[in-house]
Length: 333
Length: 137
Image (tube, rainbow over all chains, first blue to last red; front, top):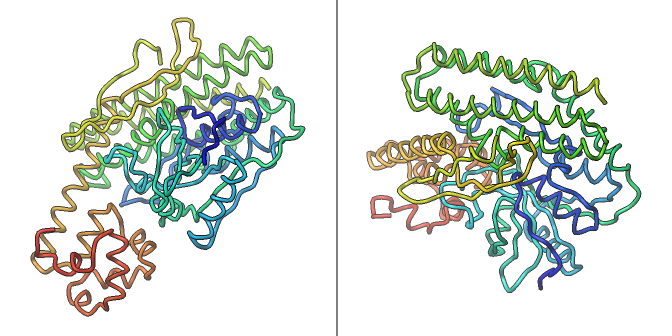
C-alpha cells in the first residue's frame, strides 16, 4: 500500500527535509529554510573527547530530533515520538502507522541504506528519512537527500533503525498526529531566531556556539604539534565533511540560514533582514573559503605549523564574525 | 554562494562514480536565494577520498596481521565493516573487553559456534567464512 498523496521533496538537510515533508502532508504550509530557522537548526559544536575512529567530533547543527520537535511545537502540531526495545515491535508499529495512511519519519544509520553510493555508507546514525508505503517486503522511502523516491527491503530498514554506536536510534520513529492553533508564523520566526542567537552566543564555553569555533581554531593550529601529519589531515578532513558533504546546503548550513533570514524579511516585513541575509551569505562564503584552504592543507600533508596556523586564524575570524552577527541579530528582534 | 560558482565535481572513489546530486542554497546576482543541484565539490571529495584511503590501509594492514596469526579474523571483518571496538561490541552484544579478547587468535579458537554465529551475522557472512580466513574470502 502506498500513500499516494505524499509528496517527496529533495532537501539540503535530512531533518529539516523530513520535518518539511511530514508537516506539509499534515497541511502545514512550510519551506525548508523556514523549518530550519524556526527549528533553530543552526549551531556549532566541537567535542574533542567524542571521537569516532579517533577523530574528534565537529557539528554545524543542533542535536538530532530537535528541529522536528521544535517546529511542530511552535506551529501547534502534536507529534508522536516512539522508541522500541526490539526491531519486531518497531517494524510492527511502522506498519500500523502506514496502514493508517500516516507517513512516518525515522532515525536511521546510512550504513544500511543501500540506495546510497557505496562510498557514502559510513556508520552515521543520525540520518532521517520517511517511509510512505510498503509493497511486499519493500518500503517506499522518501529520503530528503535523494532526488527521487527509493525502495528499501524490510530487513535493511530494520537494521538501519537499530544501528548500534552513537547515537543509537533504537527504532525511533515520529509523525504529526494533530494540527492545532500554534504561534502565528511571525512569532515562530522570531522565537526561532532568539533560540539560535542564544545557542550561538550563550552556550557554555568552550565547546559550543561562537566560542566553539574559536576553540576549534586553537585546536587546529596545534594539530601538527600534537599528532602525526596524517592524523592531522584526517581531523581537518572530517571538519570539511561535516561542513559540506553531509547535506548542509553548503557552508555548514550558513546558506540555508541566510535563505531563512530572507524569507523572514518578507514574513516580518523587515527590510533590514535582507541585509542580514546578505551578511550571512558572506559568512557562508567565508566557511567555503576555509574548507577550500583546509583541503589544500590536507592534500599537502607536510603538517607544517604555518599552514595549520593559518586555518586556525581563519576559524578565529569566523568566530568573530558570527559573534558580531548574532549579537546584532539578537538586538534586532 | 553565487549560482554561477556552484561546483559540479564528480566524486570518484575506488574508481567509481559515487556522486549524489545534492541540494545547495545559492544566490542570484541580487543576493536572492533559490536552490540548485550540485554533483559535488573537490574540497569535500578530497576529504572523503582521504577517509577511504585511511580505511583501505587499515583493512590491508589488519588482513596481513590476521594472516600472520597476530589477530583473529574478527579484527579483519571489523575493519572491513568500518567498525571500531565499541560499535562492534554494540552490534554483537558483547562487552567491549570481551570483543577485545576475541580479537586475539588464541581466544578466537575457543569461541563457541553460537558466539561465532553472532559475529558472522553482524558481518553478514557465514560462520565458515569467519573461521576459515585463509580461504579466499
